[in-house]
Image 1 (tube, rainbow, N blue to C red):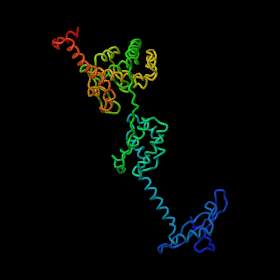
Image 2 (image 1 turned 90 degrees about the vertical axis):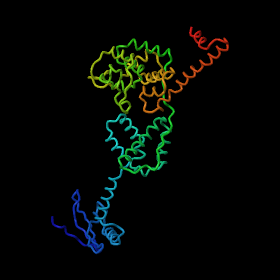
Image 3 (image 1 turned 180 degrees about the vertical axis):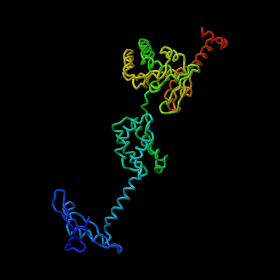
Image 4 (image 1 turned 60 degrees about the vertical axis):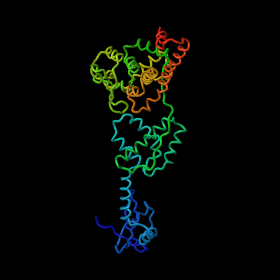
Length: 387
């Protein structure tokens, strides 16, 4: 393409050519010529209408570039490219989240994590790099959430932010955070229990619906303490009838665990009839995702409290019964519940303590009996008390 004709203006080093706009109107395109470090540079200054360019404005641009107050077009382009590269190399909180999500696409709870991230973390930290954060940034999010959200939600969101940053540190994508993201204490752990009368009503309602998967799952939760998700994932190959164990696959995101197969649970499996695949299959034999309708009907028939969660609640009832018996120590209870830490089992400690206090009261009864019947051996008094 031949070079366009350049026309001089009254300003030194400023010329223009003529071109056409999209609507066909003729428009001047201004150019400037100057030397930088002994090198002759010619570059576009701007268009007459599109950039509101005039010969005087073009001359002003030329003067600033000669003085070094303004970069040449080429230098501006190179600077923009470098800036873009720098931006692309930044590991912002948002970029870290997207990479974390890609690398952990199969983890349990990712959907709720994404909801928490988009609602609470993204608006506050979208383009920020973790190393630029200060404790005040995190405190602002915490204080804002505490006005409208439950303590557990606040804790979960801050834990997610901490997890995202820890991921970046492990992958050596970002430097270590200069401070620790503290999680607020949560005291709203819900431990559900049933009175003996309520439990009797529930057992009657379960017996009346014993053929339904919902009733069978509720019975297993009560007899084994299995979680709702573990019941949904349970397959026949996970039940070792010979050795007497149930394998729990990926319990709450942790390693596989085993719990004893007691006789009550064995009876439930026998009533179902052994098969293949899932013990409680969903549609087309796939893993079940809900049993709400059946268990809520049984809950209604048993006239249980409205806030009682049938499957989760029966796991708590199982744990409470064992703890209050005084015959199961907390370490054993932790293993039966497949808790990752003793702290998770500690909520049942008061029940075991109560059972121990009741047992301890026997000492007072024995001493009282000795005082009443001075001279008789302690063993003889105990035997009389047994009659």
